[in-house]
Amino acid sequence: GDSVTQMEGPVTLSEEAFLTINCTYTATGYPSLFWYVQYPGEGLQLLLKATKADDKGSNKGFEATYRKETTSFHLEKGSVQVSDSAVYFCALMPFSGGYNKLIFGAGTRLAVHP
Amino acid sequence: DVKVTQSSRYLVKRTGEKVFLECVQDMDHENMFWYRQDPGLGLRLIYFSYDVKMKEKGDIPEGYSVSREKKERFSLILESASTNQTSMYLCASKEQHLPYEQYFGPGTRLTVT
Image (cartoon, rainbow over all chains, first blue to last red):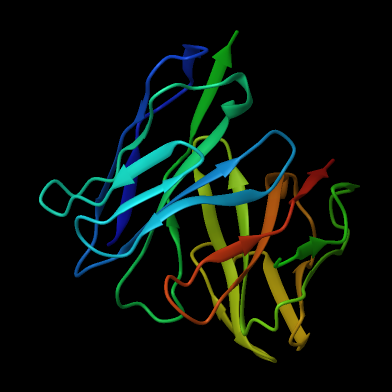
């Protein structure tokens, strides 16, 4: 079945470091891909999305490119801030599957220190 | 802005109690979802509803039921709470057009003692 695998955390970085959180997926057809972020004590917020191969989603300095050949959607940011500390979830929405359910990875906790 | 609200941020219940978690959305979305979030497991779908009074089981429906009497409101019911239902519960609603983004509520952290 469809699934999402993302790198285990926690990821600990110093402020202004480069961030990569790996995400790979297994799905038939052409799913839509998402990154959600969960700040402490809050629900999930959509960070960025991509709906077809080679699309690049971007928001708040974060980027991810939909790579069909490697079935990946890695999250990157060139210079992280303390305020980026959160849990990041990669998710896919199967192309077919009725009612557009989301399938989530396990989440990666990011801690950024000054 | 889409708003999804949940009735409680924190709940503490005893084993065997009947528990109601309420979710309300203000964007006239047809689809609504209940997930539970556990460390290392991500979010897992409990139930979803694609219209008023219409529902389908998700991946982990055992021990839960749902109610959707009005379009804006989707309730999750724990018929007889157990300690293994201690978790964070997240409600979401979904827009009807690409990319079918789901909007989440702030979550309810339920502890069953």
